[in-house]
Every structure is written in structure tokens, then in C-alpha cells.
Image 1 (cartoon, rainbow, N blue to C red):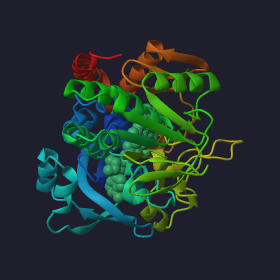
Image 2 (cartoon, rainbow, N blue to C red):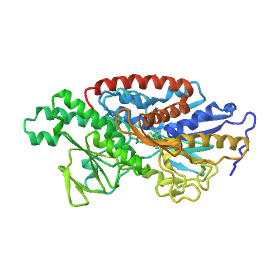
Image 3 (cartoon, protein in one colour):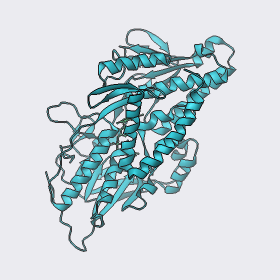
Length: 452
Ligand SMILES: Cc1cc2nc3c(=O)[nH]c(=O)nc-3n(C[C@H](O)[C@H](O)[C@H](O)COP(=O)(O)OP(=O)(O)OC[C@H]3O[C@@H](n4cnc5c(N)ncnc54)[C@H](O)[C@@H]3O)c2cc1C
């Protein structure tokens, strides 16, 4: 479908509002800004924070020695010499008749404090008055992503930490560190064992990518602190027969083996039915000590999105093959928030950064086509493959149908970061991030060298 929008001389520029400064939104804005006729366009990115979190690189910041800010790209320099305006605000409502969004402005100064602050979550709740304002659009791109899911399991909210944002990793690492410190002071062996119990619920990519480096770094840290490694227990619970249900069986079996080699106890083929302060209850009528419990059991679009009056597919916005929201010529949705169902399939594409990036490219092309009056392109819905890292220097997965494991797969994983960096800022960004990541890698390797 094509939607022609004439741009006449001296006419107000065509305003494209992109809501969400993540993989999809930033890619779309960068491509639109680099479009050579962009003086006819006004590109506004509305984002809760002036930061993009590169979640696919989150596994690199799990070890103790790594700096979590590596996964936060500061947006103003990215947009500085481009025709992109960044509004730090949270979208709350949509009026499709008036073609405007409602948003809560977040004071910039408070954000700077947030960045400097040790625990962002506290400072952000201390924000002064937040102003409500409207912003008109000619074209709207919804790219607000998702959040960790919230299945109705008794006690999950109270007794498990959820993982989605960098601040969650930071919080989790602090919990683990506190436990190790308490364990050093604890003379009673049974109590010490309890303190050194770590449970991860969910053997998908997120759970596995956190479990691998956690197992390595907790053990090396404990060893340096003088704690016995034998007292540490790290368990991963998943309902499947093996972890990583999205990968071919051979890779899944290798992933199980690698986790076991890292000292992770796999509890497979069971579901968590309840959590209490002391235990995680499983649906096979057994229970294990809760310890520090992490929930990495999936993602869900936030409920406010379903109240916007847009067509929904389960909890995601229903889109056509050209990424337009069904029934709206000037609204697009991309990334995790969008439900794209390929022809012949029943389920929407999985929530992956790779899809968000490619959708960002496609939506930019289609908005330019709208303005030029040319035809839309359809989203191809294809990704090169998927690699999942399991601790330092090891990944499993497949690319173009070829299964890989160990360091070749790990190279594939790192290449996927580079593809993302290229989309975000070209080769200079690749160079800069590669250097930063190599520096960090060396540091992490040094602190892990005492073991395995
Ligand atoms: C730990 C972890 C590891 C992952 N690893 C991989 C991986 O290895 N490979 C892979 O392909 N995928 C991975 N993913 C999934 C990937 O991160 C997501 O699919 C991707 O981030 C989706 O991009 P997006 O642009 O749709 O949303 P996001 O990147 O999440 O960006 C959404 C943006 O919208 C903003 N926002 C939200 N609500 C509002 C609002 N109301 N108003 C204004 N702004 C708003 C948010 O602050 C955020 O900046 C991982 C996810 C996690 C959590």
C-alpha cells in the first residue's frame, strides 16, 4: 500500500514522530535523517531516556569487572549533526483524529543526575513536576519495545528479580555481591550455603546469556574472596527438555553441556508454580531453596499500548507487511511492540533486536516512499541467524542454516553487535565500539583468569 503526501515549496516540513529510542526507533531516525532530501522532513524522536540500551550486548556486562554503561549509548551525540530532535518524554496517549500524541516531559537536568547517580531507579522517582504536553505528527512510528513479562505465578513479583533493562542487571549484580559478602561473615556452613544459592528461572536466550557469565564470575569472585566453590549452587530452571528452545536440538544439547561444565545445575522439564521467601516450588511437587532468584521468562508489551485504540494481535500492535498499522495510513509500528505475522505463519515474529533494526530500515524506506509517492517495500522478516553466548568466549547457534558452537559461534555473536553498530552510526561507530569492547574484554579476561 502507498500513501502519497505532497510536499510543496514553503510548506511546513512533514513531521515524523518516532516514539522509542531503541534499536528500531534510532535506526529509522538515522536513516531518515541521512536521506538526502531531508530538509522537507522534521524528525522527532520521543524517548523516555536520552539513552539507547543495546540489550543484545547485555551478556558482556554481567561479569563483575564489566562496566554496565557499555550497554548504554548516549543519543544526543548520535543525533547531533543530523536533522533529528530528541524529546525526552514518555508517551501516554494517542489521538489519531487530531494526529497527536500526549506525553509527559522528563526534565533534562534530572536525567543528567540519573546518569550520574549510583542507583538510577531511586533518583528517577524523585523527579520534580512532570509536564504533560501534546505533539502533532504527520507520520507516527511506534517503536516503544517491550518489557519483562509478568506471568501469574504466586510470589514471582516479591521473590524474583526481573531482567530487561541495564539497571536490572546492575541491581542483580549488587544482590549477588551482597550475598557473597554476607557469606564471608557467616560462620554457619548451612546458612553460608543458603547465601550462596542462585536460581535462574527461564532457559531462553536471556536466562542462558546471564547464567553463563554469572557462573564464571561468581565462582572466580568467590575464590578470590576465600569462599569455597563447593558451597556455591547455581541452578537454571526451564520447562523444555533442553535450554534454548529456539535453536536446533544439536545446539541445545551443546548449550546444556556447556552450562553444566560451568557448574550450573539444570532443572529441566518442569515449571515454577510458586515462590516463597525460602523456596521455589516446582510443578513436579518438589522445591529448591530460593536464594537469589532471577526471572528471565519472556517479554510482553506494556499494557498502556493496548489502550491507544490501535488494532492488536495479542498484546502487540497489528501491522501489515509494509509495517503500517492496520487501518492507518500514517502510523507504523516496528520492533518488539509490533506483531508481524509472515505469510503462512500463525505466530508473530519473535522479539529480536535483529528484527527491530531491519524494521527500522524498512519503515524509513516506506516513509520516504510515502513522501515521494512511490511504492512501499514489504518487510522480509528474515534474519541471518541467532547466536547465544554462554559465558566468556563461547556461544552456540546457527547462521544461514549452519550450526556453530564455541569460538566460531562467539565470533558470529560479536559480528551481530557490529551490524547493529553500523546501523547506528556507520563504520566510525563500529570502530569506536569495537575498541571499547576489546578493552573491556581484556579486563574481564584478566579477572576471570584464575579459573576454568
Ligand atoms: C537481556 C536481553 C538480551 C537480549 N539479547 C538479544 C540478542 O542477543 N539478539 C537479539 O536479536 N535480541 C536480543 N534481545 C531482544 C532485543 O533487545 C529487543 O528485541 C530489541 O531491544 C527491540 O528493539 P525495539 O526498538 O523494539 O525496543 P527497545 O530497544 O526496547 O527500545 C524501546 C525504547 O522505547 C522507549 N519507550 C518505552 N516506552 C516509551 C514511552 N511510553 N514513551 C517514550 N519512549 C518509550 C524505551 O525507553 C526504549 O528506549 C535481548 C533482550 C534482552 C532483555
